[in-house]
Length: 156
Image 1 (cartoon, one colour):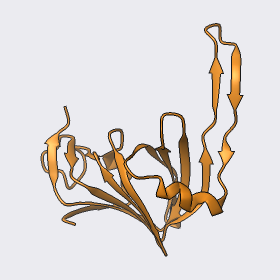
Image 2 (cartoon, helix red, strand yellow):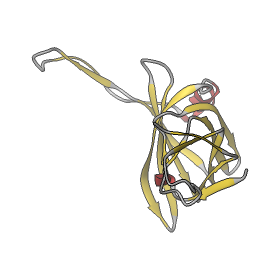
Image 3 (cartoon, rainbow, N blue to C red):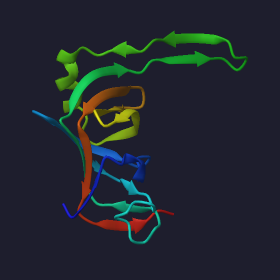
């Protein structure tokens, strides 16, 4: 890939991203994405305005999935009374492969840094599998590498 940014996910906006695929191999978790926005303050962005890029790969080098949770919910009526509550559900590590196979052309909700230090990084990746199901995947890694081939249109 022509451009890359290491260990600086704050230079990206994930609000328009669609995950095309998630690849897990020994020592690396890769998100293949479309719709990524490179912020204007990214050192690779010469125009200094937010811009879309073509297909981007977010690699969690030394990456390992440590936890997966299906997000719960609470429903309230107009008066603020709780009508229904469903708690978060942990996903068994043995079921993660099935979940990841379904993560093709799905919305990326967000990428949240839980910890960033010299000893490593931990991120939570939120995936909207469909209208009703959001999953949070915890990934620990040694470093992150975001790479892409070319810039596209400016963000309006």
